[in-house]
Amino acid sequence: MIDFLLSGWGLLAVLDLGLAFLFSFIVISQKRDPAVTLAWVLGFFLFPFAGLFLYAFFGYQRFRLRRRFIPNPSRRLALIHEPTDLRAGLAPGLRDVELLAAKLTDYPVIGGNRVTVFDHSTETDTALTQAIRQAKHHVHMCYYIVEPDSTGLHFRDLLIEQAKRGVQCRLLMDAVGSYRVGRSFLKPLRQAGVRTDFFGPFRTFRRPWAFNFRNHRKLTVIDGNVGFLGSQNIGHNFWRVGSRRIRWRETDVRLEGPAVEELQTVFGEDWNYATGENLAGETFFPSPTVRGTTLVQALPTGPDRRENALAMIFLEAIHSARHRVTITTPYFIPTVPVALALESAARKGVRVELLLPRKTDHPVVDWAGRSWFKEFLQSGVKIYEHGESFLHSKVVTVDGHLALVGSANMDTRSFLINFELSLLLYDRGVAGHLVREFDRMAARAAVVHHDELSELSLTRQFTEGLCRVLSPLL
Image (tube, rainbow, N blue to C red; front, side):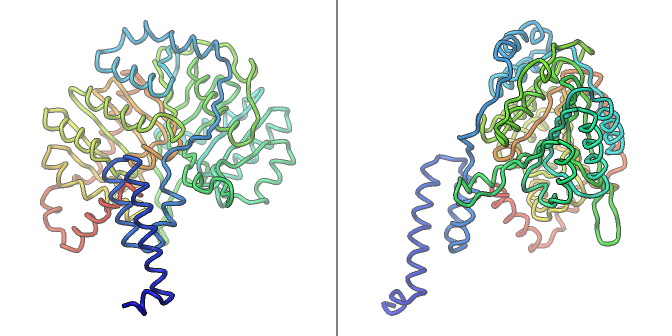
């Protein structure tokens, strides 16, 4: 025994054990969610050195050094106090949702907007192309994924065309999601005067742990008065499975009206952080113009803001439900509070329905999500699995009065780690459209029954259970 401890392997084992205890002390002292803490502690001891390495890059959940960008302090202050009358017109439950979201994000509800919903990626591509071609002053785009394929080249060439006409064009891409973008794609853009940059590139000696925080937003702002956001990235709208091409199913919105200023502010914050350039002035933030009647509240969330903001807003929305909740998401790994909220809503008589893809590009995520199915079904939650296309939409509706649309998935990364952007839409017409689209897809999807879950093998049950234990780290 003494000989082993004095050997090279023995010293490594002692070092790893000591580091495991040290890192466990650090994680426990941070008073995180118990499930997250337990997952990391188990990882330190079960995976020698690998667990420590992963924690060094992926264990941090706060992004403390992010700079804030406020283009017009007086206008922002006015917006914060303006919603009092608008809030009074909401149902009591929705009033609580709006108030909580405003306090957590500093983005209040804003009236006078027009919202157009796109249920298919081809609709979004067509509308976005037309809007970019009509740009007069600037085009600002921020996307998690930009692919150098035919779709990516199409939008690249559009930006080049507009830049040559004198339109200011800026393109911000996430360094991880857009890793395929190379010099051959960027060079023509920069030669034409399009300003491009990457969010969060890896830097070995400068906060390497920040590499874990990804900008998952999908956003375009044109001339400060038109905005696009939702689930769709810039790239082919299909997923290859062997020789087959499965189309992606997206949900995006076009926004016109005073709330576009909020989207421009979000882009300005991200752009300022990545480049240092400050986008301010009337050219980027023109005087708001009423375009419709929809009440809109922007929800920019991420590790730079109040912890668990997105999860708390979602929980408040679920608790406000009296009749029906629909959730459409590609990646479903609920936290325990979210799972309990859905179960309790179903048990008190609310019609809770989930529309999920039958299969995604991340099997571990599938298994972690399916580990909850049995409990949900026992509580009365109805689950549909969509197989016609790869379901990538991220939509929540509550009682046909409130809709949440954006980039956020129902998982830990979206709740705590990624920079996300969603919209709360307080509008029966918009929410009703999204409910009808949910019903249309659910009618063609497979209903998950309790019997098929009871027939799972012990190996499959163990796999799903293990993935659930590790889900806080996914």
